[in-house]
Image 1 (cartoon, rainbow, N blue to C red):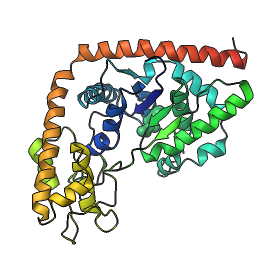
Image 2 (image 1 turned 30 degrees about the vertical axis):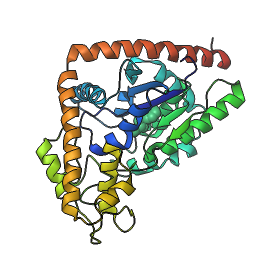
Image 3 (image 1 turned 120 degrees about the horizontal axis):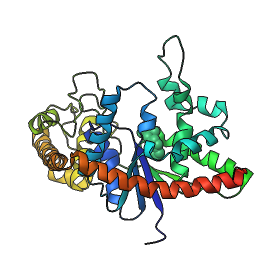
Length: 331
Ligand code: TRP
């Protein structure tokens, strides 16, 4: 029990999660939460890199905690908290900027991407130093593994670089984290455009994206009208059949059935039967999540969980900050 390794991940506040979020990230976390000392936090400071109406932000934070619980994050096993409740994140974030070269931050693809269309006043420094805050989120808890999407891999690599740099200068303070990216089906693709990730902001009509809070029938319809390929064979082949492969990933991730077994079962059947089965599986999953969501989305209940989570997180984070302050000569 005592020497379990630490798994930690941060999530941007949004109650409006997609099937892609669930199958690509949350489910992996849930399945691993027994094997690690686990932390999940709402990255509400990170959310401030773009303007969000305060009332909306508050609501998103609440909805996202309810959502993570509904997806199976167990507050008895996992410390759930919100980043802004643990002031140590900001403190270490500030310290870590002193270890970071501007060039390192300029190289971040997320930064390059997100800083493209800014107004005449240029890019916010918050967006620029965003990764150093993430570095600190990770290093505060002696994290061993960080389950994230591929788009965040570079930030975890930066974390390793900065941890190493700091340790070389000041002594062995930080643990070296590894990124964990789920091997298959990790990327659930847009149902209408299987060249792209399933994304919240998919071109407006949202036919390609299933939201966990979608009406069940609407979600099923989205599966039934998903773009498929012309080979007319239920066969996993991401290159030549991205549409069907994506639906296979979805089914396999939900039920645990292997691709081989799915292929065998649908050998002499058409896409219609296959899609129907995927739609049923997705429908059942959403139904389960939505029932829990109704139960959990209760202000006092959630407040209580966050308070307890923050207390636990603070204890650990504060210990690390003391260590950091000491080696820096700030104590
Ligand atoms: N940057 C992550 C994202 O946009 C969220 C995040 C913040 C995070 N801090 C983290 C993820 C620490 C893992 C570990 O998705």
